[in-house]
Amino acid sequence: MRILVLGAGGQLGGLLARRCGELNIPCVALSRAELDITDGRKLAGWIDDACPDVLVNAAAYTDVEAAEDCEAEAARINAEALRTIGTLCRDKAVPVIHISTDFVYDGKKMDEYLETDEAVPLNAYGRSKLAGDRLLSERADRYIILRLSWLFARGGRNFVAAVLGRMMRGMSLSVVDDQVGGPTYAGDASSCILEICRRICADGGFSSWGVYHYAGKPDVSRYEFAEFIAEAALKAGIVSARPAIAPVSSSGFPSKVVRPRNSRLNVDKIRRVFGIGPSDWKGEILRHIGDYAMR
Image: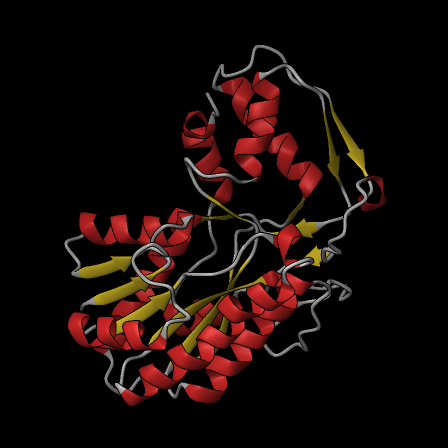
């Protein structure tokens, strides 16, 4: 099994590339500096040179705030590039796994989102990602669109690191309690991707292509997530006293970005088809909270 990873400079793409190295899985991993995914000619050349059994696209325009002012640029990377990726992967007979997001949903559903639920994004980033999902599905014939929620990783800029950093500086926190979702450890997501790669490479008759959800369980509010991080930091001795964390509503944080209140993703399909369980985000934080400390 040989994998071509796009977006290796990001927290998920980089972790996926490192995991391939640890497992001796042949992998060509390209950062944005090495390949602009909107450059179809160069992308075609890399696919020809790498001869991958699977292409994983973890590259994206991920600055949610900036996307509101730069929607055309976000669409160029998150949407238009997927037209090219899908076409090339179809023509070169390469299956593709594309990383998407919970932001394609409006968050108004009361229950967990299923892969079959209508996607109605609330913001520019979500619109660009949904457009990319649709363009890929129109062009590629063998594809997995993997929608993740609340991704975090050691050493990256994310919610866990930000919350822990404020705690270590003795600062109080105000965290929204009306946004609910499933925190997803990027290491678990990379293992999920590799298992999907293994399955589709081993099964020549694999036909269960399409959209899948992958997320951590249990679902929590952002406030509950912060509370858990605080408790783990206290137990690990990273902070000497439990910081004050105030629950507030989203309206207390004026922003140009409208975020979904409900990002709960149903993960039954990926368990049923691939035997993959949800991300153990609590276990990751309890075991490795020290690695998230911003020093």
